[in-house]
Length: 303
Image (cartoon, rainbow, N blue to C red; front, side, top):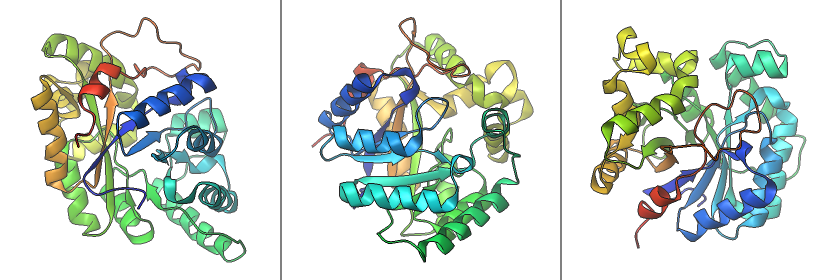
């Protein structure tokens, strides 16, 4: 199975890296024992090309697109890409799909940003229609899903959901919606420090994009956070809910909270305290996305 129950994965933002650097990072994550690597599609690498490269550069670890933007390829091409990667690499690839953000879809892709739920349902239906004309076997598919209706669609038409920027209470509600047997692969931000001032400052810098992105801040409001929690880069209450920091035991406890709430896999996205060596290759990439290897090493799966 490409996603193992109770497993821990690592998030890898690719746009900061050259090919050789990406290969080295992926191999290092695999060597630490993480079960999967999840990566987004932003402004540099095309999602499935990158997925194939990471699969080629590693031996056992699952590689998952988190997420591939559905506006970037038509449904038939998406099916072909997934089946190609499965044919070449077996069950090591997971296809995460999502509607991305209006700023990316309208600004960079030049498409009209449709209603997310309707657009995704239509896309999945078109993928199913295309399958009738194609050879091969599909990889597992999950949806980047935050809202309850999108999560319901993920349960109805795919193998599960991939929430991002969401605390354990979101995981619990997601499990109630999807029921047993579906994957919940949720990301957890981690800042490796016990200094609350430094942790919150780094978190606010890393997450600033999401505070102006409707998909994300509406998700927090649904969970009971308020408009006041969104001000000034995020209240301490909201920042602490989104980013785990403190001792190793405290961070591991947050990971355990997600599993207790029903997560299948928890994906660690590390936030560095300093990013002076960051090599930002694309405008608009405003997160501190160089992996914190100290954190990933300390939090690596045991046994």
